[in-house]
Image 1 (cartoon, rainbow, N blue to C red):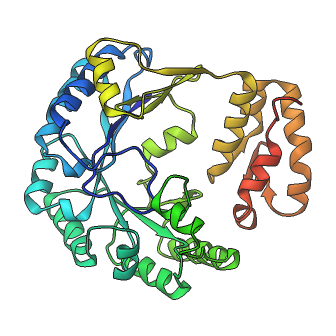
Image 2 (image 1 turned 120 degrees about the vertical axis):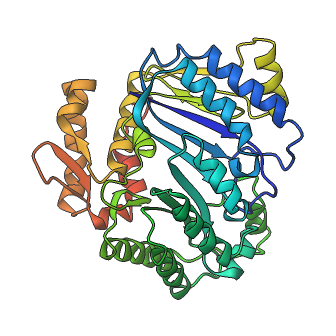
Length: 379
């Protein structure tokens, strides 16, 4: 099985924190659609004829474009690839784009899962993040989507904002749960270079939240989601039963995926390839049938390190047997040696002899644990 990701690099405005490639103009949407369809045709062998289980339309802001833009893309996918029965097909959207008419038109496509960028239920926080929707638009959007027949709805939330209080974060979580949705992705605010947020921080115009408050927010998140019946199946993702994101999980399970569009990247277990983060260069390269991808070979050490990171991000944990099968006894023994201190500190646990996973305590320091378990190239 495999996945396809389509990147839509168009936004009405740039959010304060976002470092994904996007443009605040839609002047090239026709040329871009043609390039996306052409790339889909040209690269259909990349996945070695694996059937497609998930498709994800992300961005950028896909919902900024007319629904008709996506019909030809889906036609191209279904013509050139074998799509499994009952695939998961996700469409990212902003609440203010999703009118009743747009939702109805979207439901006529194969899309069966919505991922809606909510981020906060506090108006002042939305303003700070340069989000263009209101809280009321979120509520109406979710209601309209359910009425139209969408039964798999996810929202994104952000915490750890400058000036954010634990009470405000608690309020946003309560309002999210009041929507009776199936999935929540909750991310701590990251100060990515080249973003307006990073520049404000460097100029000392904003002060990041203290580490203890960040930890308190994360603990509140885990507790509230658990009490509401959500499973934390990955560090930042929570789902009701039977609604774990199959597409997200494919990344953590190292399933092959094809990334289409400007700045998209692909993975087929042997290589990673990267499309240019420049729409004109992307369109020109595709139209002139150039080989536009930068390709990186995945060596054994890189594959091992990736296995550690992706496996330990999930609540299923890491299989020692699988590690040995993939990388041999020497690396298995290295891993077992490295985890001993974290097991003794109750940061990792072994619910079975084969499985190693983070404890709730360990999740708070997961980055440091994972870094210590990796193999440094020059060792």
